[in-house]
Image (cartoon, rainbow, N blue to C red; front, side, top):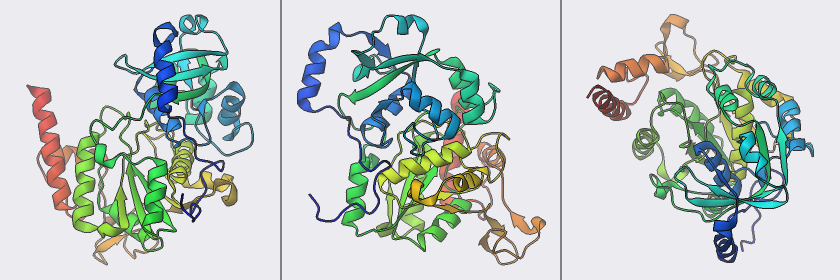
Length: 395
């Protein structure tokens, strides 16, 4: 046990651990064939894992109705602690009818394996449209997060959970660093201040610029790409990870960066998800969190800087992590450097920035985006990946 306290306390004060001990696991396995079963999809599975490893502290399970209602309506748990995204397990009525409160439920993963246990304390019906409008700011099912809500079951199951065992990630075992481990790493490196960076996209020059600006004022960077469920047209996680490796090995001081995967699923909830992402990184031990343009956004559902403005709805002390708010970065033709409107004297026509859609079109055609947008080594990796995808889809 270290003599030194954590640099930053987990959300709620204590890091949750709901990974079954060897003895607990043995007892659960003995009961496996006699427990009612609920099958989890990929998102529910990642939620189970995030709860178990403490990334969703202070949650110890799927939300009961009091917490659910409070989060949907006020962005707070029933006890008043800030929390912006409901974490629920939804099932069809026919499944819920066969389950009894105050009993154990076997949780099976997408491939049918017994991966967890739910101590069922409550079953409750919820209003999907209310959740959609409050959390996602729209009731349109064209929004990917809203569509998930509409497609899931009508009954929420609530209660503490146990993850049977923490397996290594099948794709990125070397980058699987859970909150207890990241906190220990930061401490071992002597980092008192750490900035977290959330991304579901390949890293480009604008990202690099704001990350390095942040790195000037803290001890270390926790580069924490999300590798859970994303939209079908997002760049695959393995491609993104190769891009991050290229960036770290060539363009960052390696002794000041830790690359680790975030196994959570993407919600695309814009402003609310920005708060959520900050709370998660706080649990990993980050003291600061980068919030850029249209954080966790999709389509035109959110204002450009709504994800920054939402932090002003909370007192800094109750969030317990410092948001670093950055404007849209671009290459300035006047100063010949990356900049934002805060630092650049340029006119809009003297600024180089491309949309993600435009960049994907260039990559599919085998064309390099301009070096002002993407490092050539990263662009080459993306071109190779995009052309492979195009070849596979046309065969």
